[in-house]
Image (cartoon, rainbow, N blue to C red; front, side):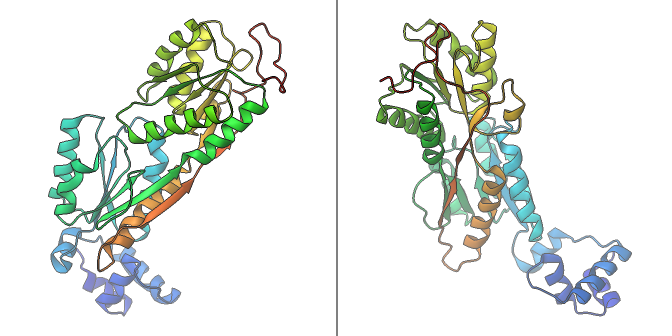
Length: 344
C-alpha cells in the first residue's frame, strides 16, 4: 500500500495538517520542522494524491494555461514563469495549445471545464472574451492579455508596448531614418492590432508616415513573403518595423536573398526579444517583453483573484524596453550614402 500523509506525519512527529501546510507551502514553518517532514517524504517515497485532495477539500489543484502556438518561441518563457509560480505554491498546470484553430479552441475550453481547473491564464490574444464565457459561468477565473477592464472572475495584464515602441522610433529617427514600412501581425489578434496602431501612430507623430503597412501571420515565412511588396514599392523604406521577432527574422532572410544588406541598406526592428533574436544574423534590434515575468504575473493574478471572497479581478502592467543590436544602423539614401540626421 502507498504511504499516506498520516504516515509522513507519524514519521516526522507532527500532525497531518502540518505536513499539508509544508507540502502546499501555505504557511511558514520552522526550518527544523520542514526538514523533518521533507526527510520523511523522501524516506517513505510519498507522493500526493491530487484526486484525494480534491475530494477532501472540494477544490482543484489545477490551473490552466492557454497558448496559441507551442512552436512559437515567445511562449517558452511564459510557460516557465507560470509553472514556476504554480509549483512553488503546490499547484499543477494544464497546458493547452489552440493552434489558432476555432474547433481546437472550443475543445480547449471544454477540456478546462472537464478538468475542473481553478482558473486559467489565456495568454493568446486570438481568443475573444465571448469564447470563454462558459468558463466564467462555471466559476473558473480567467486572466487575459490586453483585453480590457477587469471584472468578476476576469483579470487583465496590460503589456505596455507603447513604451518600447516609442524608444524604437526615437532610436531610428536618431539614426536618420525618414522612410519606414510596417509588417504587423494578424488582424484577428488584438495584441497585433495594438502593436500596429502604436507603430503607425508613433511614426506619424514624428513625421515618418509608413509608406506600407502590411499584415502577416506570426511565422518566419509570412514575414519573408511581405518583403517582396516592400522592395517593389517606389518609395523603398530604410527601416522595416515588424510586429514580432519571427516576422522580423523572416524579413531579414528575404532581404538577404534579394541582395539587400541588413542594416547597411535597410534596418529591421522586431518585437518580443525571443531567445533566438540575438542569434540572428545580424543580431536583431527588438522590443523586449519580459515573458518569464508575464507568466509569473498571470499565475499570481489568478491565485489572488480565486482566493478573494468576491473573486474580483485586477489589472496588472508589464513594461517593455528597446534592446539595440546590430540590425539597425544609420540610414542610407539607397546608394550607400548616409542620410544626414538633420534632414527633414
